[in-house]
Image (tube, rainbow, N blue to C red; front, side):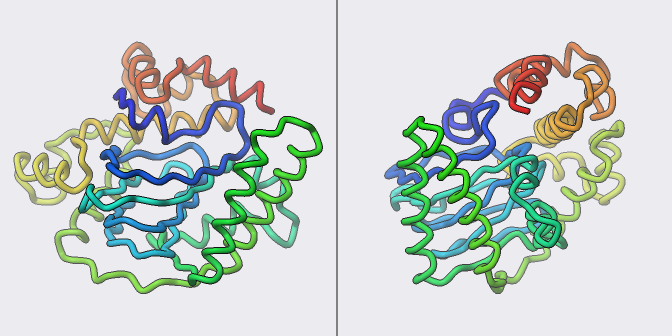
Amino acid sequence: MNNPVWNAFHQMPPGREFEAYHHVSDCPQAVVYHSHPYFEIYFFLSGHNRVVVEGLDVELRRGDVLIYPPGVMHRNIHLDATVPYERFFLYATKEFLYSVSTPDCDIPGTLKKMTEGDRFCFHVEEEMLIKMIAFVDQIIARSNLQSPTEMLINRYEFSTLLIRTMNMMTSVDMIPQSDYSKGMGRLIRYINQHVTEPLSLDDLAREFHFSKFYLLREFKKYTGITVHQYLIMRRISVSQQLILQGAKPREACLRCGFKDYASYYRAFRARVGMSPEQYRKSVSDAR
């Protein structure tokens, strides 16, 4: 699935360990339901937005923070595209997070544990949020400097920002989930659990006692994409994780649920912007 909005703004360049972004959009464009092969920490600053992440559906307020571990599907919905949309977000690979962890502070493990049970949304108060915005802007400004010293400082400051973020987050009360949202959440979790297996609309309709027409219509209404598109994207995400763990592309193809390599190759290239082998090489070169 080739999406220019996705390609331009919503993936970290290959070979990078971490990135920080601060964006303001006057007329924000819709972004498809998607995931990353790395961690994302997203801070909502302004706008009129709702986020759908796996089985959670919540309207955002300033200071809300979303943690997306690798492979977690999410979608930001603009409820009013005339309202300026401001946010900053951090990307970091699991390998980078391990490299700045200690035996007593396992950063990727802590982030993963914080999101167990669909607890993806947290909150920071205004005073801390302002400090973090300044910190991120400083990291972004320094990222344009190429001297080894500045790059090392940026690496240290990015690590410090992540640790401060984890330390300052407090649980935010979630809006009550409707029966509709809970139903879609159960459906998505079921697909996630069986994504590497043969899975048809008939299987899903039978499991959840939906008609196929209802399932197709409501799934797209909730996620913005079809069940088939979701399956493809999720399987590609699984294959990216397998490649990161050392699997070869053809092995990843079979283990993530595709029936043949040609279909996998086309879907991977459309979704990631490069071939599976090029992706494997970019991962290898970065190590």
